[in-house]
Length: 309
Ligand code: MLT
Ligand code: MN
Ligand code: ZN
Image (cartoon, rainbow, N blue to C red; front, side, top):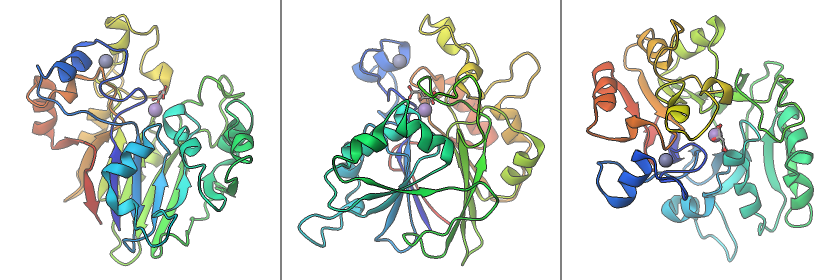
C-alpha cells in the first residue's frame, strides 16, 4: 500500500493568496526556509494503477499535474483516480469534486450520511454535479463494518467518527452529528501495516488513543501550533479548538497533540503532522518549533511525501 500526500496544507494553502503573515510573506519573498504547500489531500493505491483520492482539494488539478502516476493515459480520456472519499464536507476537502466534472462516468464518492447531507444542502455539490458527470454516492455506514474498495484490493479501511467540526454552511454546524468528521485506519492486509489519517482532529478519547497506539503511521492534524495562533496575529476571533483542531502545544493544562504523540511509543511508528495552517511556525524548517518536533521524532508532511506500508 502506497500513501502519497498530495497536499499538506490546511484550507487556504501556503502561502495563502491574501495573507501576509510572517510565514506566507516569508515563503513568498524567499526570506524563510520553507516550501509551498497545496491544500489537504492524500492518495492511496495498492496495485499502483488505481488510486483512492482521500479529500478532493481545491488544488486537485495542480496535484494531478504534479503527480503523473495519477494519469496513466490508457485511453483518450483517463484518470488513475478510481474513487474519492471525503472525511468531512469542508471546502478544502470537497471543492475539488467540481474540478473532476469532465469524467465520462459518474464519480464514485464515499462519504458518511452527514457529509452527503451537507453536499446536497449547505454546499450542494451533489446536485450541481448531476448536471455534469454525476456522483455515484457510496455510503460509509459507521456500524463498524470495514470498507473494502474495488480500487484498493488488499486494503481495509475503517472509518472512525471523530470530534471536530462540520463546516460553517452545514445545517449541523451547531449540532454535531456522528459522521461529520472521520479519521481513517488504512490496513494493508498482506503486511498487516496500518496508517491512521485524520487531518481534522479536535478531541482524542481513550478509545481513539488505543487506535493511534496500534498503527505504524500517524498522519494527524497539524493545523496550529498554539490554540490562539490566529487570534494573536489578528487574523481570526477563533481558537484552533473552535475550528475543530487540537493545537500542538498544550492549552491551560489540557494536552496538545505533542503530548498525545509523546505518549505513543510503538517501535518504528512514524508520527507525521498534516493539514498545516499557513500561520503555523513549524513550516519554518530551521526554526525552534521544528527543532522541538525533531527532538521528539515528529515529522512535518510536505507535498509529495510518500509512505509504503
Ligand atoms: C479547516 O479545517 O478548518 C479548514 O481548513 C477550513 C477551510 O478550509 O476554510
Ligand atoms: Mn481543513
Ligand atoms: Zn499566512
